[in-house]
Image (cartoon, rainbow, N blue to C red; front, side, top):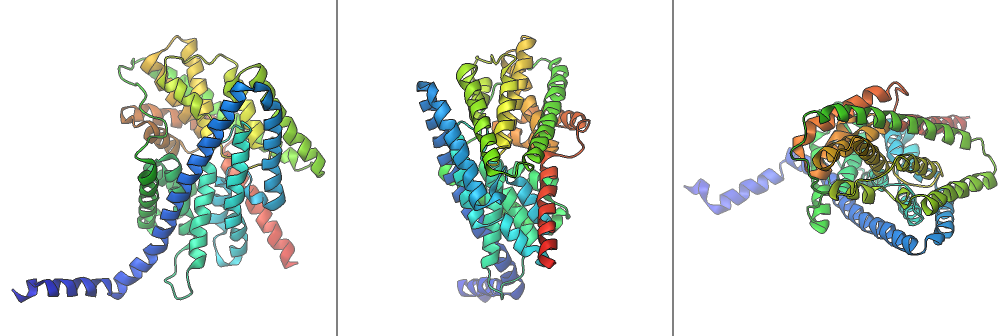
Length: 452
């Protein structure tokens, strides 16, 4: 009976907490918990500011369309200049930088990782993307959130004293990237699958507890402020016709090829831009991209502007599913123009938007409506993103969690796998893989020059 006294139970709890192994595990987990909370808080703040900037600029532009020819060039040039002037490692999506940092995460290249993931990168990334979206840029915040989260986890790791139990820098960065994606889209499973499919080069058993915990904490922090929201909502998908599966394959074919072709064009443009040594020519290119987007929006179709979330919501949740044959081309041109400026901006949301528009176009051509049209729109989203990333399961799970429509998981996975197969006909590697190699080559070249 004496063993059951409250004092004895309290002593056991204290002894357990102060057990060397338990204490070691808690100390190892603590940095992940702190970084995950910070990631959730910053992701929420970034989400709110980004949404305000996007909706505010679109409201102004819809009232005074001619302002496009002022706002878009000024915003694009400002976004590009901030990155070029202060830190080019903040350019683009941010996911290739994280992938390169994971490969470089060893003591020899610590200083190179610090260039890719830092407090300065976080600040520049946020400022540049906000300026781009203010100008109607076809960019997203999800890739940038991944680099921001990776930077937060990296900084927390650097702040640990020498006496702290050692934590794998590589696992810390991978966990941060997964937590960032989970917080950005409110898709915890998507964050985990992304880490495994896109980032992990080691067996998941080495960091699975930290990964799961970080994703949960970052997601709960974001949900605690924003509520248990869905990125998109609950589209109607009941009473889908059996034969629609053949059109899912058709949408996946076109969307997967389109995503892969867009990746190749982006890489070619970026390689060509490197030959522009003079800043004046680079500036001229940025202004040209801004004017192309402004011209398309003003004279042809305002739906070319923005991240694509507005277009996805309209197509999935209203009866107005008309897009026309030209809008997919306009959105793709805008995506390429925005991404190749050299400013910061993600490609996840614009890819989902482009895929949704391709799916809606094919649905319109074959007179599909309601649930059948929605299935094609969702399949197009998965397929186009897969064409860009070559991560069919990540793409499928992300769209699944954004819409909470588990009954269509097989359609989504079919779309992802089909798109991946056809995208490989254009290029066997993803856009992220190519860009990661460019960052790695730059890092190794810098190391070689420093050593000589």
